[in-house]
Length: 251
Image 1 (cartoon, one colour):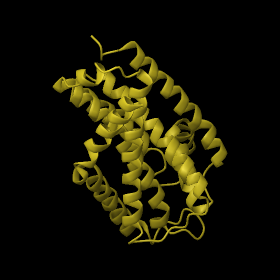
Image 2 (tube, one colour; image 1 turned 135 degrees about the vertical axis):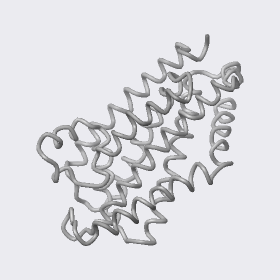
Image 3 (cartoon, rainbow, N blue to C red; image 1 turned 90 degrees about the horizontal axis):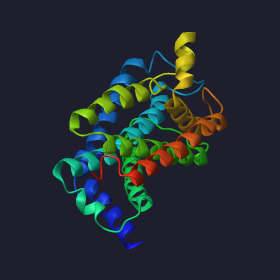
């Protein structure tokens, strides 16, 4: 386990050494969303009975931050290592593809969860939220960060330059997160867009996570778990297959 623990420590220190960029900046971005949307809509929108709009918005912003930062950590680490050439120092040691995968995945999940906790703590300065079902909060936070950690590893392996990675982030990650009910309930959408939302797995991640806070959601949290769990398993298997084959890593 020495090689795995060393690589994990390296990946954790990589974002921990620059907390201003990797943690503080995403927390500030989420805070700006919270301040702007809550100021404009707090007095006009109530999605769930007895839940103010600012409180409703909090879980969505937390989960969005977790997902985006879990993706960013794994993908940026791999693309930087590939471009600078130091990926060879990770590939040369006798590390199995499973150890490689787990080190990058756990580091991505840790960064996502640290940012999520930061958004929660800052958000509590502006509104109070309940945590009626902590088990659901933890389950969806872990499963969802794992999904986007896997996507980040896959994107980092596939990308040859930062433009490719930016394309994935702008045309895949951003639409999936912004069209998933972060800022609204899908019941407020026309029927067509409600149907589109039900195809988006990120909707189930955010809705299940929000259910953990309020005990209310747009769908049953068990349905969300049924959707998210296979995503974790399939993406993990796909990532392991790419690592084992050496695709775009061992030329």
